[in-house]
Image (cartoon, rainbow, N blue to C red):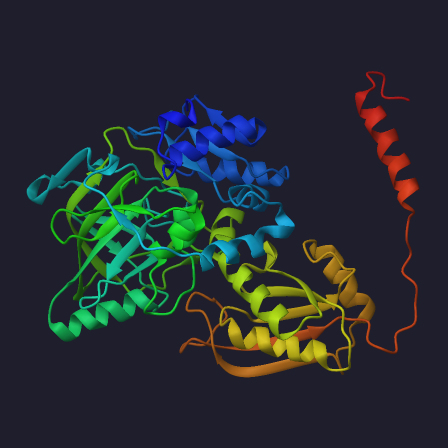
Length: 467
């Protein structure tokens, strides 16, 4: 990519160049031709099967006039690298930077303004897009961050929404979260006009993480982006509606979402691992395309990929860890496993009194409406490994006494098991040992482990296969 000095610090190209310099083995660049029909997804899945989650840069994608960068968020270690910490310090680093939020800084222009088309010249078929799964209706934008602004205060909301092309200047999209953008759309409805929006496709990874933050309605994720970056997010205004978008973005689409217009959309491979056609079926009419002269398509792997899950869950995890540790100092760690998509959480703790694990479970289930199942284990269990948690369940859990079930709570609209009205039940499993447990866990000494590691390294280095 070249030296980082050639790029602005808020540019995804700056991140790629710097990361290649520091972690060259964690970026795979492919010059051979690959298809725009599922090949990127297939490569990510194949590498994950080998226990690898590198950044992929695909330079020769059939039918696209832009290189593709994907799997940026596939690795927790790589996300921690963004925060200049290790995986163990990721949650604290995220929270510390997000608390240092700062307002964006408006600039006159930026690379995203290098090529602007509007009106009759808008043609969405010129956008680089991928088909991610065989079951997807067609090609999809997966990294699209829609920015809406409050009509009175100008406070913005950033959120991810899948989108597919419906016509030359129209996208079909889903505001399925029924979150703050949905609330802004209803405010526009009250005023009797469509809602101006901008969709950002391709930004610095820290900007993309900020768009996943969970904030109050009167807070702006662009401020969080500044905190995560350690400098105000530089923004330019879109030509028609003046929406503030990142100056260093790759592509921005400006237009309106009409609260009265509904179109077919989906199915699309969602984080549940299922192809979902649950959608709000909203119509986004694009009135201008802003892009760099030679943009990069920053794509997010769909489905239950590690990238998709990490992007959505790390800000949530960080918030939950902080809340739980503040209320329950005995909590040592929280983890949302990929195996549970967004619906499971594991908690490790040093339980100090009977019933404390139940309090922790109920607190977490109340704070996070995505969750269906919470498992609490002792602090010596590695909750980043499913097999360790399942071992704790097998050894310590008694169904007749250690389960808590709560019914009729709000759930996630994409949960394939949820009721037709979007409610779910939640379950907590107390897999801690409890105060009356008697047993000593079998252990291998550190010295023996070190000797075994040394012998295996010698074996791998030996051409004869013997040592």
